[in-house]
Amino acid sequence: MPAKGNEKPVVENRVKTLQRRWSTPVPKVQDLEELNVYLRECCLKDQQRISSVKKETIGTRLEQDKKQALSLPKYRFDPCIRQEAKVCKYQFAQHGWFLLIAVTNNIHYCNLYNTQRT
Image (tube, rainbow, N blue to C red; front, side, top):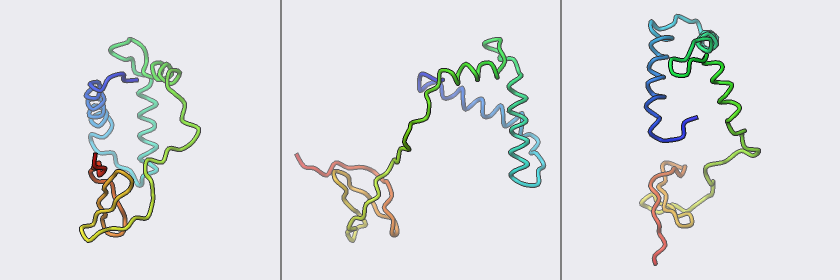
């Protein structure tokens, strides 16, 4: 598992490599289910490949990572608070310390501003 934010380019390069390997030329499939089967087969086949860095198979390294990974939380995390709010003529609504912008009938996350004056 990545431990630092600067490890992200490695992941992005890996995505490009997989796109070249598995999607060039573009696979000819009838539907999404057939594409999923094709991609799963590609993943399973790739697990047998030897990693150039660690000299182990990708599947072995996956199992090692799974053992170190945290389990999913017991309860689902809801990243938003749904609450009715009065919207002013400028399409702003206040929720606690936050000032939100309203788009159509729904309130969407925009920039958060501390509206408490000290």
